[in-house]
Length: 172
Image (tube, rainbow, N blue to C red):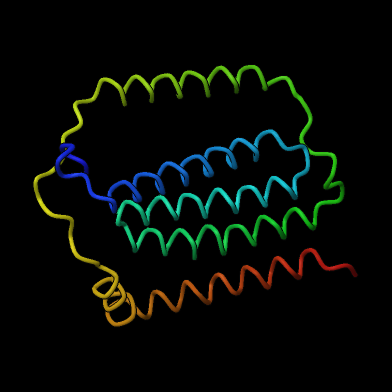
């Protein structure tokens, strides 16, 4: 990362700019998920949040986590949420204000304040070791060689769950 002004290169500046732009997109879209009244639009903003987080992982050189973020969250979970929204009878109504909103806001505020205090009071150190090389090859080898059977079983289980959900929601 950035240690001193003499070591700053244009790549470091570009990476920092990309990080902050992606962080802004992720935060703005996450806030939009909460503030938008339409459930469908909230689901679309959630997809944008997932992609923004995947981009943050790329800027942090966590390539495997970025790919998993896109495949699992931006792909599978988002499609599941959009299906759930589309099967909902009154999509445009959104969530209504209820009695627990104030309590939920207070708890969320306490969690946020404790996270900010922890982030500001922690002594963050930068490692002197170089970043590890890409690990996608080793993880893919383990996933598709050693753990291929559990991986396929999970895939079949998810397929059965999707078929079951479609059977439950179909009109008779």
